[in-house]
Length: 78
Image 1: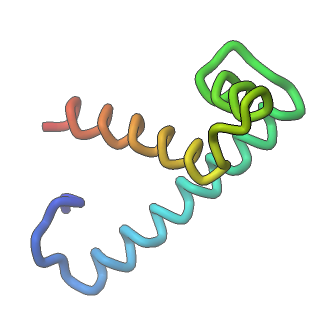
Image 2 (image 1 turned 135 degrees about the vertical axis):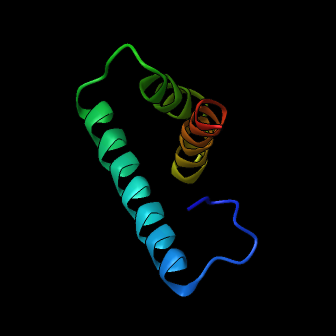
């Protein structure tokens, strides 16, 4: 199954939706953890920028992290 399938079946659509929700929930937990205990990583850097400048919303941080995850997956699984 590919996320790029032009006409996925109903089961694939459900599976993809569940996976998307799980990834976003993971990122929410990771962001909360980094706020409580900063690390030397991208999520902490994005949260620090958000606190300093208010330039990024939580949704923008999640989308940026998700795009990096998907981009890495697509380029390494082809």
